[in-house]
Length: 87
Image 1: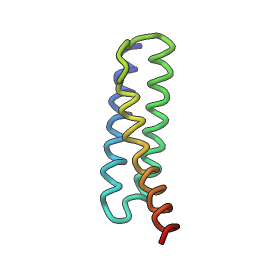
Image 2: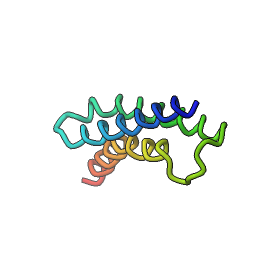
Image 3: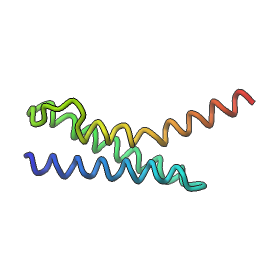
Image 4: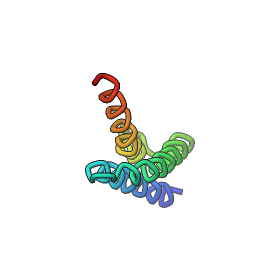
């Protein structure tokens, strides 16, 4: 189980990094949102199994890092919407 959890953790971080980097590219937000969603799903699976079987006792795990990185495209879209409302 630990090996599968490690693979899901690496996948969640990799998808989160890819989603965060695509936000920088012009028109990359259209690709980063679905990738960020997949990263969020992988991170949620990681956190679920990690808390169910109590594998890691650290407070910051790969799932938490993946959730933070995968939420960056959503935060960018929210920032764009808020900036356009105040203009």
